[in-house]
Image (tube, rainbow, N blue to C red; front, side, top):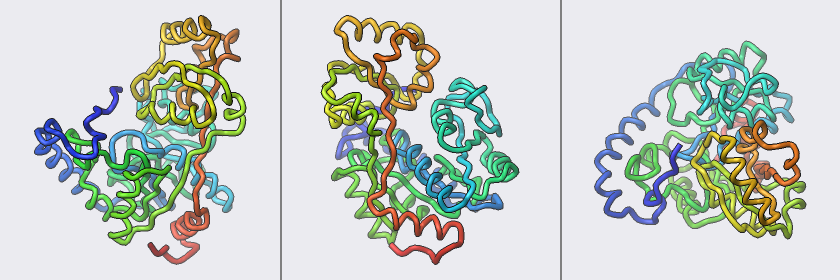
Length: 339
């Protein structure tokens, strides 16, 4: 998958963005019309974790965190994913012992390490399988713009540093539909990390009566200890590789080089051979993401495993009690939350 074009992330649209604006207007109008349709009742609460834009904003760690909170409440959550990059259309429950990224996608493999996960192109069929296997709630990773299922709680995740980019719709910008219209189809916004761009989205959300919650992504203590004071090569195939570099530097590592591929990159033996040669020549560690590790694990030589540092991140809410109210409301345990 190619990286998002840089002009998407400028504060103001440039010439190319305005030239593409008519196409974006049409695309956004069609998407918004779909978002307004009624969905199928899955028979259990569906909690959707989506975003307003194309690309990564922190949906997967958010879905993992919400599933963990539901488990703490005695629920049996299943995560429902499309399985981007995988060959299996589903519906199928991901089994890490027999499935791989080529089968179900890298994000589904990561997710299945934390919570029972269903992959399905057909969201209705996927939710039905989850319910059949005992789900009391379904956390849908992505699908805010997909009308197939009726959603009890609709959460939009926003990256604080990038927000919604230049504010235009695909292909002129990263938005999947006009922001105001999407906010009207959302119950709450989760802004991950600091940044003026995220603050701007939060202000607009509050102005439309939506709850806004702050959160941050925290690397595990083990990863922080392994990287502090080290000089590393950053290896990633994610939507925003600059965020991974910033995470490494915040942990006290010095990033000597970056090997940044497009999101969902399918690694080859040649990729591993090249980055290892670079690391060995300078006696450096290679740091990578948990998602990338799902694809690297079968390619990385056992003799060089100590040279590879995986950096898992976990989502932490600034006000856990507020997201708890939202979850309880979705399961019918409390009154609807106020903005």
